[in-house]
Length: 505
Image (cartoon, rainbow, N blue to C red):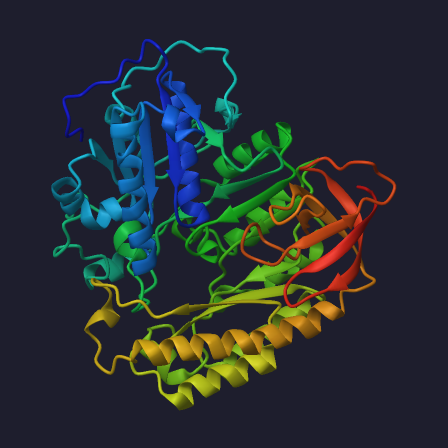
């Protein structure tokens, strides 16, 4: 695991700096590795120039993410020359894909840790033995282990669908220079795993599952993360209760496909059951989940969302496209008419729900007619939030070998047109927010100007949707970040709104 003989003394509690790139699922992995290091005596620091050990947890989803990962590794490597760093560790998806190339081409890297090897971060950092607990403050929130009585068996189970897809070659990594190409990642943390929260004290992610079994032709995540596997029901509940006991008010459940939760354990409507149980935790304010596969949105799931005030009225359903031929080529299935029926079913079951989706434009073979079908669908569906990705040709994906590649110039034109279309839809929808009162989680002073503060409502997922700007503190001289306030929306813009404080919740 460790490629350098250079060691870092654990006797002086070495300082470790973390850079976490990519999605919230990757952030949870970083928090787990930080927790493991903390439990072994390391001290976390936000200042890379002061760190003796630097860890870059990488993303490898698309080309831009890979380039950002490489640039960050090289930036951190410079601290071995100009700073105090003596060890540089690279972790995450880029390691799964390019382990040998990283070792060969970036000699400053001392160790690599794949997505299924998180516990190896200790050996990589030279801290294999736990150290005595030290009372120095950490810049992060320490998530302590829940009661051991809540623990259940931790053996990994898989869905029959995943086993079948493995036989069909879905998870093949035979041509990769990645991490242990013959062995898929199987690691999955639980409620007893040490973890340091990097998201503040109010909001936290919980990863309820790992991996993915879907055959999507554009995606290599299953090759990077392995087959779908769920955490034990009681383990998720125990972690959630521990978080709330420490002051967390918003929990965000995440996974590649949270709507498959529990299928590998024989649970029917497992996500609905889990949400129903978590919604009963006292002092929890908001409960949300991200990434719902469209054909897994069951009546029971919608009924559960509608039933509990604590479950936010927000659903993120990455549809990827709306034209039947493109969806078939993507190995997703369905079409615009089916999706419109799904959207109508969701809105009927949960009135006022905010819907978010994402699309890929420029998939191989996408015609002008296909793109117009997508645009017409967006006009009809009127999503609250929408993201557009340009197709990225990923080696190892099925689509990599497809012909009829769309020229990059055309792909970018389509992206801009679709985003312009959504901008008009969003602007009109946000005008309807003016005059409404909403509970808003205030996050702090705006980076744009000290005259504004920022927050988000239940209709905003962390970091990906618009912003509630606060320009009037109402009855308060100052606000406290991390608290909930009742706000009245006074202005609306394309994606963001402006509000004044009415009261504290």
